[in-house]
Length: 223
Ligand SMILES: O=C1C[C@@](O)(C(=O)O)C[C@@H](O)[C@@H]1O
Image (cartoon, rainbow, N blue to C red; front, side, top):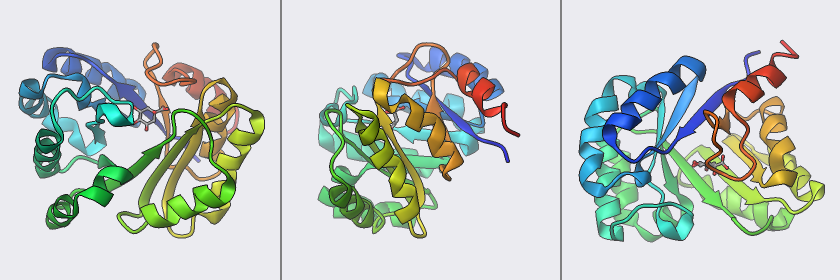
Protein backbone atom coordinates (compact mmCIF):
# COMPACT_ATOMS: atom_id res chain seq x y z
CA UNK A 1 0.00 0.00 0.00
CA UNK A 2 1.41 3.35 -0.97
CA UNK A 3 0.50 6.28 1.20
CA UNK A 4 0.18 9.34 -0.99
CA UNK A 5 1.11 12.97 -0.55
CA UNK A 6 -0.08 16.25 -2.02
CA UNK A 7 2.45 19.10 -1.80
CA UNK A 8 0.78 22.49 -1.41
CA UNK A 9 2.55 25.19 -3.38
CA UNK A 10 1.75 28.88 -3.05
CA UNK A 11 3.95 30.93 -5.37
CA UNK A 12 3.35 34.53 -6.37
CA UNK A 13 4.29 34.44 -10.07
CA UNK A 14 3.46 31.99 -12.90
CA UNK A 15 7.17 31.31 -13.58
CA UNK A 16 7.89 30.49 -9.94
CA UNK A 17 4.78 28.29 -9.90
CA UNK A 18 6.07 26.28 -12.85
CA UNK A 19 9.55 25.93 -11.34
CA UNK A 20 8.33 24.86 -7.91
CA UNK A 21 5.74 22.55 -9.47
CA UNK A 22 8.49 20.61 -11.22
CA UNK A 23 10.31 20.00 -7.94
CA UNK A 24 7.05 19.14 -6.14
CA UNK A 25 6.01 16.62 -8.83
CA UNK A 26 9.36 14.88 -8.57
CA UNK A 27 8.74 14.25 -4.87
CA UNK A 28 4.99 13.85 -4.52
CA UNK A 29 2.07 11.96 -6.07
CA UNK A 30 -0.04 15.10 -6.28
CA UNK A 31 0.50 18.84 -6.01
CA UNK A 32 -2.00 21.44 -4.86
CA UNK A 33 -1.48 24.73 -6.69
CA UNK A 34 -2.81 27.59 -4.60
CA UNK A 35 -3.77 29.89 -7.47
CA UNK A 36 -5.14 32.42 -4.97
CA UNK A 37 -1.55 33.51 -4.21
CA UNK A 38 -1.25 34.88 -7.78
CA UNK A 39 -2.65 38.16 -9.07
CA UNK A 40 -5.91 37.63 -10.99
CA UNK A 41 -4.29 38.71 -14.25
CA UNK A 42 -1.55 36.07 -13.82
CA UNK A 43 -3.86 33.07 -13.37
CA UNK A 44 -4.59 32.35 -17.08
CA UNK A 45 -0.84 32.41 -17.82
CA UNK A 46 -0.12 30.10 -14.88
CA UNK A 47 -2.76 27.63 -16.10
CA UNK A 48 -1.16 27.57 -19.54
CA UNK A 49 2.27 26.96 -18.01
CA UNK A 50 1.11 24.04 -15.85
CA UNK A 51 -1.53 22.49 -18.12
CA UNK A 52 0.66 19.52 -19.11
CA UNK A 53 0.70 18.30 -15.51
CA UNK A 54 -2.86 19.09 -14.52
CA UNK A 55 -3.76 15.40 -14.24
CA UNK A 56 -1.75 15.38 -10.98
CA UNK A 57 -2.76 18.84 -9.79
CA UNK A 58 -5.40 19.95 -7.31
CA UNK A 59 -6.35 23.56 -8.13
CA UNK A 60 -7.44 25.84 -5.30
CA UNK A 61 -8.59 29.45 -5.43
CA UNK A 62 -9.29 30.17 -1.79
CA UNK A 63 -11.06 33.45 -0.88
CA UNK A 64 -9.90 35.59 2.05
CA UNK A 65 -13.07 34.69 3.97
CA UNK A 66 -11.87 31.05 4.00
CA UNK A 67 -8.26 31.72 4.94
CA UNK A 68 -7.05 32.27 1.34
CA UNK A 69 -5.40 35.15 -0.48
CA UNK A 70 -7.57 35.73 -3.57
CA UNK A 71 -7.49 39.48 -4.16
CA UNK A 72 -10.49 39.98 -6.45
CA UNK A 73 -14.20 40.02 -5.77
CA UNK A 74 -16.48 36.99 -5.63
CA UNK A 75 -17.78 37.46 -9.17
CA UNK A 76 -14.22 37.36 -10.49
CA UNK A 77 -13.43 34.31 -8.38
CA UNK A 78 -16.42 32.40 -9.73
CA UNK A 79 -15.41 33.29 -13.30
CA UNK A 80 -11.87 32.02 -12.69
CA UNK A 81 -13.17 28.83 -11.05
CA UNK A 82 -15.12 28.21 -14.27
CA UNK A 83 -11.98 28.85 -16.32
CA UNK A 84 -9.97 26.38 -14.20
CA UNK A 85 -12.70 23.77 -14.67
CA UNK A 86 -12.17 24.00 -18.44
CA UNK A 87 -8.61 22.74 -17.89
CA UNK A 88 -9.92 19.62 -16.18
CA UNK A 89 -7.42 19.31 -13.30
CA UNK A 90 -7.12 16.14 -11.19
CA UNK A 91 -9.37 17.89 -8.66
CA UNK A 92 -10.86 21.36 -8.40
CA UNK A 93 -11.14 22.37 -4.73
CA UNK A 94 -14.22 24.51 -4.11
CA UNK A 95 -15.45 25.51 -0.67
CA UNK A 96 -18.75 24.07 0.57
CA UNK A 97 -19.87 27.64 1.39
CA UNK A 98 -19.19 28.75 -2.20
CA UNK A 99 -21.17 25.87 -3.70
CA UNK A 100 -24.09 26.47 -1.31
CA UNK A 101 -24.35 30.10 -2.43
CA UNK A 102 -23.80 29.63 -6.18
CA UNK A 103 -26.20 27.20 -7.79
CA UNK A 104 -25.14 28.56 -11.19
CA UNK A 105 -21.55 27.53 -10.55
CA UNK A 106 -22.70 24.08 -9.41
CA UNK A 107 -24.72 23.69 -12.61
CA UNK A 108 -21.83 24.91 -14.75
CA UNK A 109 -19.31 22.57 -13.12
CA UNK A 110 -21.62 19.64 -13.82
CA UNK A 111 -21.39 20.44 -17.53
CA UNK A 112 -17.58 20.11 -17.39
CA UNK A 113 -15.69 16.89 -16.70
CA UNK A 114 -13.92 18.39 -13.70
CA UNK A 115 -13.87 16.34 -10.53
CA UNK A 116 -14.86 18.50 -7.63
CA UNK A 117 -13.31 18.41 -4.16
CA UNK A 118 -15.79 20.06 -1.82
CA UNK A 119 -13.94 21.57 1.14
CA UNK A 120 -14.72 23.03 4.54
CA UNK A 121 -12.28 24.48 7.08
CA UNK A 122 -12.56 25.66 10.67
CA UNK A 123 -9.50 27.78 11.50
CA UNK A 124 -10.42 28.23 15.16
CA UNK A 125 -11.72 24.96 16.59
CA UNK A 126 -12.99 21.43 16.03
CA UNK A 127 -16.80 21.18 16.12
CA UNK A 128 -18.50 18.33 17.99
CA UNK A 129 -19.06 14.95 16.33
CA UNK A 130 -22.68 15.46 15.37
CA UNK A 131 -21.94 18.82 13.72
CA UNK A 132 -19.05 17.26 11.79
CA UNK A 133 -21.16 14.32 10.60
CA UNK A 134 -23.97 16.64 9.55
CA UNK A 135 -21.47 18.76 7.61
CA UNK A 136 -20.06 15.75 5.75
CA UNK A 137 -23.55 14.60 4.77
CA UNK A 138 -24.39 18.05 3.41
CA UNK A 139 -21.06 18.31 1.58
CA UNK A 140 -21.54 14.88 0.01
CA UNK A 141 -24.49 16.29 -1.94
CA UNK A 142 -22.06 18.28 -4.10
CA UNK A 143 -19.34 15.68 -4.65
CA UNK A 144 -18.15 12.31 -3.42
CA UNK A 145 -14.73 13.92 -2.82
CA UNK A 146 -15.07 15.58 0.56
CA UNK A 147 -12.41 17.44 2.57
CA UNK A 148 -13.10 18.60 6.10
CA UNK A 149 -10.33 20.30 8.09
CA UNK A 150 -10.54 21.71 11.61
CA UNK A 151 -8.14 23.20 14.15
CA UNK A 152 -7.24 20.96 17.06
CA UNK A 153 -6.72 22.38 20.53
CA UNK A 154 -6.33 18.92 22.10
CA UNK A 155 -5.56 15.33 21.13
CA UNK A 156 -9.25 14.60 21.51
CA UNK A 157 -10.09 17.16 18.79
CA UNK A 158 -7.71 15.40 16.46
CA UNK A 159 -9.21 11.99 17.28
CA UNK A 160 -12.71 13.33 16.61
CA UNK A 161 -11.66 14.25 13.06
CA UNK A 162 -10.20 10.79 12.53
CA UNK A 163 -13.39 9.12 13.81
CA UNK A 164 -15.10 10.52 10.72
CA UNK A 165 -13.45 7.85 8.57
CA UNK A 166 -15.77 5.23 10.06
CA UNK A 167 -18.76 7.35 9.03
CA UNK A 168 -17.65 8.33 5.55
CA UNK A 169 -20.10 6.13 3.63
CA UNK A 170 -19.28 6.19 -0.07
CA UNK A 171 -17.33 9.45 0.09
CA UNK A 172 -13.61 9.76 -0.64
CA UNK A 173 -12.86 11.53 2.59
CA UNK A 174 -9.97 13.76 3.58
CA UNK A 175 -10.40 14.64 7.27
CA UNK A 176 -7.70 15.88 9.61
CA UNK A 177 -6.93 18.75 11.97
CA UNK A 178 -4.53 21.68 11.65
CA UNK A 179 -2.31 22.95 14.46
CA UNK A 180 0.24 21.20 16.67
CA UNK A 181 -2.34 18.89 18.24
CA UNK A 182 -3.53 18.00 14.75
CA UNK A 183 -0.16 16.91 13.38
CA UNK A 184 -0.71 13.28 14.24
CA UNK A 185 -3.98 13.29 12.29
CA UNK A 186 -2.12 14.39 9.14
CA UNK A 187 -0.28 11.05 9.26
CA UNK A 188 -2.99 8.80 10.68
CA UNK A 189 -5.58 9.94 8.10
CA UNK A 190 -3.55 8.00 5.51
CA UNK A 191 -3.88 4.76 7.45
CA UNK A 192 -7.63 5.31 7.80
CA UNK A 193 -8.29 5.76 4.10
CA UNK A 194 -7.49 9.33 3.10
CA UNK A 195 -6.46 9.38 -0.59
CA UNK A 196 -3.48 11.58 0.34
CA UNK A 197 -2.20 13.99 2.97
CA UNK A 198 -1.26 17.65 2.43
CA UNK A 199 2.44 18.41 2.91
CA UNK A 200 4.91 21.20 2.16
CA UNK A 201 8.16 21.35 0.21
CA UNK A 202 9.85 22.66 3.34
CA UNK A 203 8.01 25.73 4.58
CA UNK A 204 4.55 24.84 5.91
CA UNK A 205 1.73 26.78 4.28
CA UNK A 206 -0.82 25.65 6.88
CA UNK A 207 -0.47 25.13 10.64
CA UNK A 208 1.05 21.76 11.45
CA UNK A 209 1.94 20.68 7.90
CA UNK A 210 4.86 18.26 7.66
CA UNK A 211 7.30 18.40 4.77
CA UNK A 212 7.01 15.79 2.02
CA UNK A 213 10.35 14.30 3.13
CA UNK A 214 9.18 13.95 6.74
CA UNK A 215 5.98 12.16 5.72
CA UNK A 216 7.81 9.85 3.34
CA UNK A 217 10.19 8.84 6.14
CA UNK A 218 7.28 8.02 8.43
CA UNK A 219 5.12 6.16 5.90
CA UNK A 220 8.09 4.16 4.61
CA UNK A 221 8.39 2.56 8.06
CA UNK A 222 5.41 0.37 7.08
CA UNK A 223 5.26 -0.91 3.52
O1 LIG B 1 -7.38 22.38 2.59
C1 LIG B 1 -6.18 22.36 2.55
C2 LIG B 1 -5.39 21.76 3.61
C3 LIG B 1 -4.42 22.76 4.20
O2 LIG B 1 -5.12 23.79 4.84
C4 LIG B 1 -3.58 22.03 5.28
O3 LIG B 1 -3.92 22.24 6.43
O4 LIG B 1 -2.66 21.32 4.95
C5 LIG B 1 -3.56 23.35 3.09
C6 LIG B 1 -4.43 24.02 2.04
O5 LIG B 1 -3.62 24.55 1.01
C7 LIG B 1 -5.41 23.01 1.46
O6 LIG B 1 -6.26 23.62 0.55
